[in-house]
Image 1: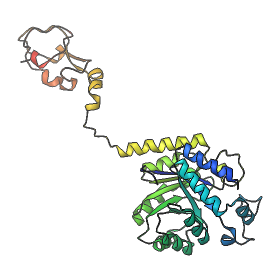
Image 2: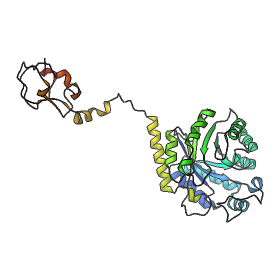
Image 3: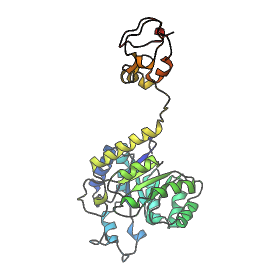
Image 4: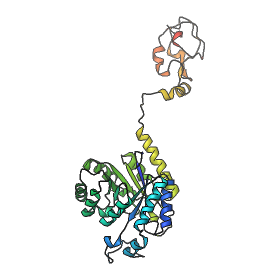
Length: 332
């Protein structure tokens, strides 16, 4: 999906609110802020939910079944969006919420699957996703260890699987991010890990990358004032672009360990800022040098200040005047 070590996914979900034009513009926006992939959600209500299924508390103004019908796209539109992403130079993803959605996305041609938190226990869906042979990002938001164990087992050893730590809270407070769980998943399953970040800023994403996250997923919107359940918990374009810059900077830091004994970058600075041993008062030739005859001052191009002890007790090879920068040739 990307040449970067850390893949950044711009989750736009249903922020488009059923507008095909907005969906296209969101793809362009995700590309412009530097994301590696843009991710939608593919809801086919007749395959996903009963009409009288309860809606979450944050979604009380419209029935979910009707919402999914109103904001969904046709197969041709989904294919057009994928092509639009290709033209924008960004990977196109969409989370399936039913086996029928997987079938549709296979026709559209997605490079990988992101399994959302609410589908982790939907083992038939996981079997269908695994059968595609494509990489999978498995979200962990609502699941216990036993439920994750079962999901990982269904996906099987042959699946290119990344476990995504996720807290299903909107917004997610810092104390519930669960970076410890992300690291525990890496140890438990021996698979790559990432973070699906539902906080209102980028701090958690930065911390996750520094702890080994290979994928960051973050919601993106034109404006937090837009209608729907996702927009008010998403990053607006300037903040998302800053997130990308921060992740890339951390990525560079982690990819380039510094050798503390390699002082070559500091040669000029050491000469300017460090100190050398100098003559404090007149010393006649043949005189045994004592500590009170010496001082340390810039520049750092002579006998280093740290070696003043080896100068004491030596004999002056010739007459030395105050403020003279000592060299080995000045000593016997």
